[in-house]
Length: 202
Image 1 (spheres, rainbow, N blue to C red):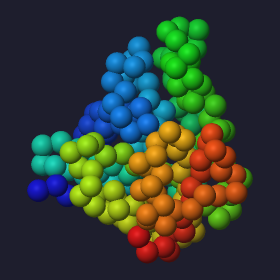
Image 2 (image 1 turned 90 degrees about the horizontal axis):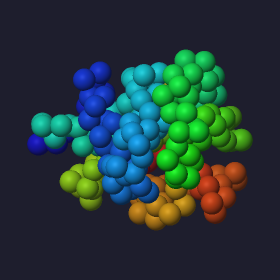
Image 3 (image 1 turned 135 degrees about the vertical axis):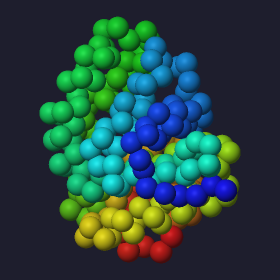
């Protein structure tokens, strides 16, 4: 029986697997890059390292097949990422060694840390990433993960949370809108940004 629980350090490899298997606008990105850890090293690893108490996973009993991860203060996270995470990331993934434009762009996401931030930080200081393997989709786990995270952020006095998403991930956009996320003023067609109050009923 699958259930949601707090992240534990031993979940890291499974979280990385979920991240790469959903890393192509929700589809499997395994083998797309020279190193399958590239996407997780941008969108998962830093989060569970910096603020593991804001990470929640879906445990199937055999493995973790989904997660929501977040940071409560995006500006502070970016400062930490620049100091503590990026140097090793840049050494592990030299841009000049990228095998194609897609890999070069992915490395760029990891190096352009301030691109994570949005102008609406006063109202939405937190940001999140959520991913579910196909085996869990359509069963209510996405909504339950968001509900769990919003409660955790609310307990910390965080007023709102935002996310950035791929413009081609139409399923994710529909999911967020069903839960009550709305586009923020900084949202663009080629870079959608959605936010929600932590007091929202989802």
